[in-house]
Length: 88
Image (tube, rainbow, N blue to C red; front, side, top):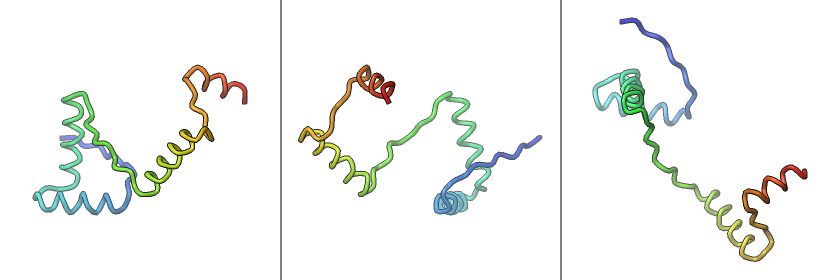
């Protein structure tokens, strides 16, 4: 079987976690990643789970909601937003 090398960047903690999980399953990291890619190709879809926001993101969302409610921030329709961007 011919092989090709694929490289991608990831957080070091994710790399370590994947290596540990693969080892606990008795397979290589390469095998685990190849199976994920094959599954994506066969199903022609990607299954993504929503990310859980961290505390900083939750604070920013809540602050934005407060500012919007108080009138400090304006809510744009898509058309208004496009016009606003063009005016800059």
